[in-house]
Image 1 (cartoon, rainbow, N blue to C red):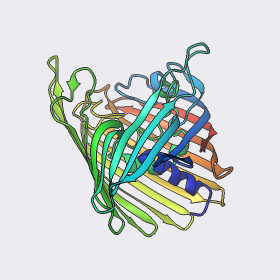
Image 2: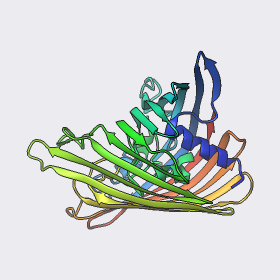
Image 3: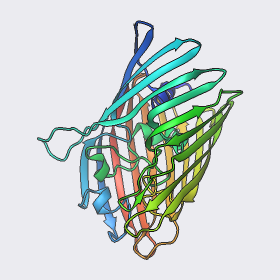
Length: 379
């Protein structure tokens, strides 16, 4: 694709993976310093209807989707926060060394007097290595499982499911909880193999996380791994994650384990992508938040580069759980249609329409209709 959206998407992938996008570069002694970031805001409106008796993380209900009402208007962030990212790089004794720090903040608050003090620090890590040995990462960064799905999701530049309960003082959800589980941010020790012929692979030990108040990650680290093979016009990937949760207060222990497979391809102006996650204890939004239930997440997407500046897209995703009692959440699904217009090489204007549906194990469903209009800048 030869549009202005392509470098923006590439820059975003670089920013999420290891630092800055279209950054300002300068020297500080033997260090190369890059400073860049993201600022975005969207007018969103949601309207909710149908059953409100769906339990769990039911995104389309009034309580979550519309902030406790039949409808809600928010002017806030989309799927990405506002963020300032600094990366320092140097080469010493044959090793490439870097350090990255990302600090984020939200646009919307619940009132007009409180300080917007929800500082969102997603990245703070160092790396060292070279082309022969690969690289080692130490610190806080995004997870591997789900990274390919969210980076390929067109709503990353927009809002996707504009769930009011999360957008106020944070972000919207894109297809998180309705197509994939959030990739998360973890303290981690990761090793990336040397890249060869378009193949890359990373394995990481993550600081174990808790799942609610009755399940803790204590003795063993979480394990994640991701392998990617690139080919002319596309790529395929395979990921895994695993962690034991120890039950407290009489709750039973369980093990989270999952696998992921996906692919994306560009056929001239047409882009196609698919991602499948399956496992036990993956959680709707985050690790283990639905207990030890079996779960399948699927995301399908098609985009069309209509002009040099305008991209049209349609995607659908679903997160589906097995078992549970009648009122428990069975599934969240979301379909989003979007227009992404590259006003300049740094500014993208976005318009999206979406419908999110939440279904219980038995009974009627809840529905949330959403609209999002706004823009995002990378610098």
